[in-house]
Image: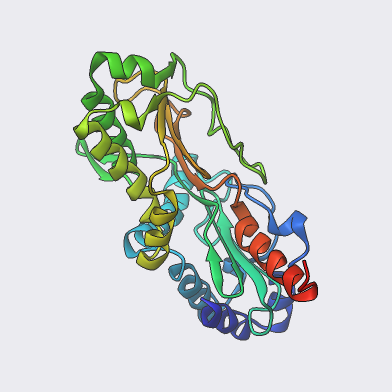
Length: 314
């Protein structure tokens, strides 16, 4: 990851490099999540030459598994589909994604990067060569594109289908506990906040009350989100969660095609999914770590180590 970030900055010309780079301590720019079409920090991929764009894609690929990278590229391509559906009036385009690097990956112990645009926001923080991988946001509008009555594009389909399988496996009593509201919220609850809420009420259905089939499906759902990361990072995140309680909550109708929302909460884990606008054809998903987003965990460890080194007596 460090080598890919250095290669990106090397590939940029001086004006693009200035736009892309920020001090690591610029928390306003670094602790940033914006998945709507808004101005954002960084340099725009559309303004880069082919070498610069490919370097940005190679950096993105260091943070995502092959499947998640394919999802991300499908999300980017949907900007052109959406622009056509809107009559080209907003000028959306698949180059409207931005890269920002915080600190100097060639020399610093603390640095981070983000690639972001409409419905895509990937942030990685690296401290003492330890990677803290969150937030990770993927959305899709339209969530499903059909041709001849069949879906030809559905980048986040598995995220919806597996949650529905889990609901079905719960049975009536389990669903009654899991469904926390008759109507879905208008968006993911964590939204664009730089700090995700650590505990959302009501919690929904605890994993410990599920039967074996339900527990297996909930574990698969969590793994689906963790496996957006490369295998080594995904395994580390799974180990971090091992043994902790999980809760699954659903809001809105359960019939496909209607506006719905779900979340999974655990120890320093928040997964959210919503499909609540455009008549249930506009999906958002996010993987967050409420206590550790934007590298809070690795930064705390770094500061503790520095304090011990400065004061061996404690």
